[in-house]
Image 1 (cartoon, rainbow, N blue to C red):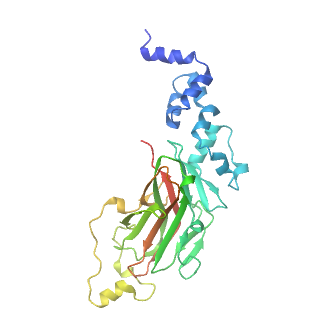
Image 2: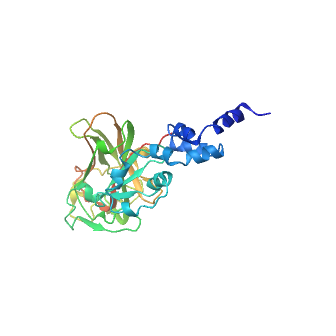
Image 3: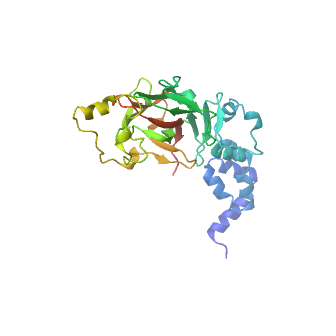
Length: 301
């Protein structure tokens, strides 16, 4: 005897494929993929361009046109284009940004390369240098050699982001074998609209969670305020109880990321600004490779 569920599926099977596709286009990408297992009609409808065109952002074509690789972007269907943009970020704006989609929701996400960021002293080869890495999205990334004033800022127009969406922003980086100066020294990170109140918090870029030798701090240049404090008899900074959210996490691509903060993109237009700052310690630090700042839609549950 047919169950109620089987009868319901049978009723949908008598509907035209276009009608089923129209219904599925009001669901989500993950729902459409799951529905393809219901029946042959559903599978055909769930793979149709009519469904996946609704899941792609309305501005998708104009954003893709900003890429030098747009003419060679391989896809045979809107579903294939959607999945490619989820798994293979596209370089846009002369390679200074990358664009991709959050797979479950289709929300727009971006990463700003170091050449799109304001990095103090980036053009001084004594402090920073440009380098190329095979696992980086961008042709050039920025390697921190040694600074006592760390200031990285990035901006993106909220019009570029998906509306009514909660975003999280991340510094994406990796340490070199010469990482030093970040032991027990937090950096201040901020997120907020330009001209409005910003969210601030303290995080750590020390991937060893304070286990590194403190003797490395300030070893490159001068004495620095940290070592001056030691010479004058002041107590050196000590490790404190901190939560995991203050430390970097490893990404699927092998890089590290530290969350800078969240931002809900509502109806207010403006520029979203993010920053990574260590301006007060006065000690020298180096050994980080910065790939960029990522603005990523929070994954749908």
